[in-house]
Length: 77
Image 1 (spheres, one colour):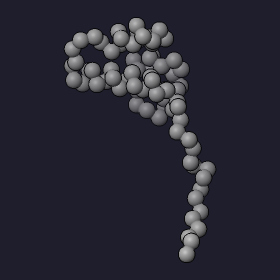
Image 2 (spheres, one colour; image 1 turned 45 degrees about the horizontal axis):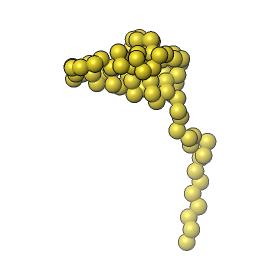
Image 3 (tube, helix red, strand yellow; image 1 turned 120 degrees about the vertical axis):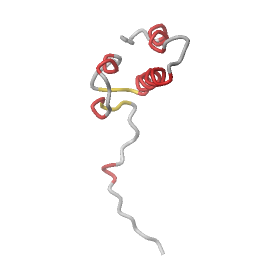
Image 4 (spheres, helix red, strand yellow; image 1 turned 180 degrees about the vertical axis):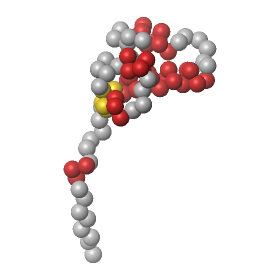
């Protein structure tokens, strides 16, 4: 016997390529890295996570910010 399920489809959205930055806890320095301070995209989120990881573990070698500046001209930090 089939069961009918009523699903509210209004809350099911496709995954966002960008999210409002207000949904996340970002420092002032991290907000400065964003092209648009109101929105964060996947690439910017990856950069911020890499910078946080670098600070946490005290990684040696090339700094993530320097690498990003060379490869992404729109990075401010």
